[in-house]
Length: 262
Image (cartoon, rainbow, N blue to C red; front, side, top):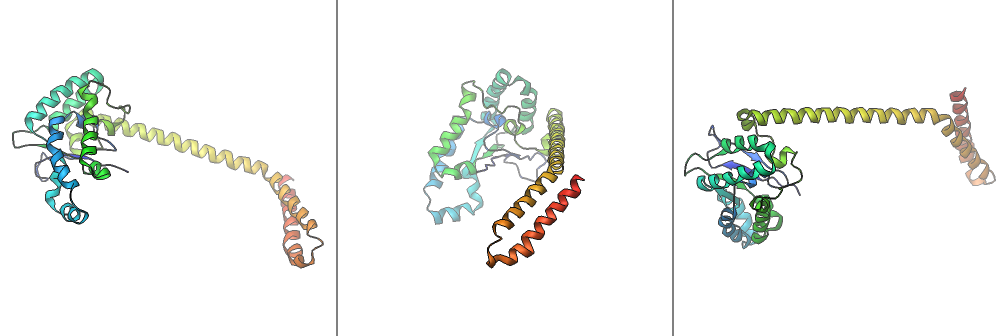
């Protein structure tokens, strides 16, 4: 199943400072430094409420706009400051190459006042199990490496696992991020070119092999057709097959083989 967690502010979508990051199959590293157990515990009662709804009640609830907040990790300005201070220490210890990018990231998304919140929508993770305890455990397991100063993931060179999918506004804000995107795209184009070149080379080798072996292939097929013709020679019921199909096919194959090898 493909998960798409989202990170965005509580600002109106028309705001100049609105942004929206999209994650992959798990929460990106930078996102996971933004919240702690307190934030998870605040969300859990909402997930428990949703879990207890009947199928019919859930369909009605999920169709309403108010349902969105039941799947959002809500990070206020004080929590954001505390968690990102620890995040800076964590990134500098284990992923020092990404520290400048991390600083750009938290500056870009930082709440401006007590009425601003950073929201992480984990609806797809909850929907996988429809269980509040499992979802809470998943979130706690996600932040555990950061709390214990352990490596977060082995895919630390993949942009999706660090920041998330491409965010245009952030690319305009952060030169580091934009340069990284350009470098990744260039690398992808080079890899694509190498792959296409290998594919063309493989096709050429296959076609060249077939061309060289064509006389042998046609000779074998002609011989097989003739052999089959003689095996069936005594069976009157299939006279038409022998006379009008197998014999002309065999002679045709022999002629092609002769012309190719000539």
